[in-house]
Length: 424
Image: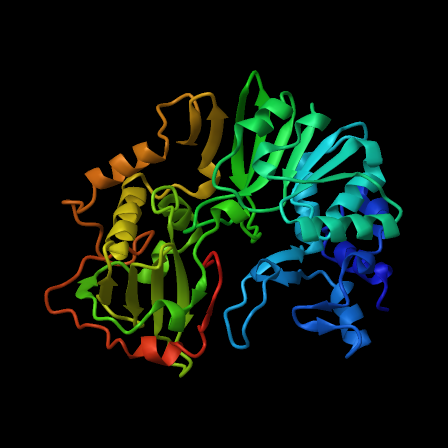
């Protein structure tokens, strides 16, 4: 059953279809918003496979490399898509849309999410801003074929769309680093939902309630959206980023898997904002792996070699930045704070900018420069962490601990040739 009914049933089976959005999901045919050819799908070559993908709860990449010509074998960065329907619905639930709301959408994409909004709220209450004029034109055509005519404009989503303001809700379908003041001004007494983060960790929704010129909210979820094009994280393949340069060697007693878990990775992303990671497992079944770190400017990299049951792990760092040292310092600071999980943090935006707080927004908080100062103060934490596997498994290196072989790096290269933009 490769129809819209299949998608509805799949979402219902996952418990991912809110009652308030069921009619929109059932009524708007996703196939009207998917091109005949997309990454991994071609209707003319295999129509059944195309339909199975379109009517499944999976994302569909509809553009790579901003639509530019790509040489065969070159890295293909996804730059537009029809998002996973269950993730779209998760965002809409966070948005808490009411039937009389006026909504601003940042990032039109294929227009599928725009159509859900227009079906429920009516065309005149839906405004959508898309940076890419080709994508915007395609979305308008898709929407017309589906019977909708909301306002779709080409522009920088960071500026919002003042002509349609005020809005009750703002929903952004790309990852941002900062919440623009324009959104608060245009949604003065409402709610904003957007994927938020930094290059190191971008897997959070920020849900913010706006009042009196300020916005306050929390982090949740595990989104994996494409970046706002003006603030992208680094991306590429190992073969393009690692030229087998010789870096500075060292060891660490911190198990590399621990720094990329949800809590510490989120915290690290508050200060290490312009570097990203990829975890690459060896393909030989040894259990070995390499944690790769890359700076967005491609000038620095670091590796930490993981070997099961090791007491220390081999580190190599290259370039003007010591990326592992930066990540290690943030991890130690997170541990010193008691290992707070992501749900304990919140985000506030006001006239003085954006700040992240822990547990209570009324307590002293820090913007990103403040976080950096705190981390620098603990950069080489004089107090060693606990021995053994206690909580975060922070371990102190023994003087005779063996070094990891480093072979996992080479054995894992083939499996990890393609690196995502976010390194999650």
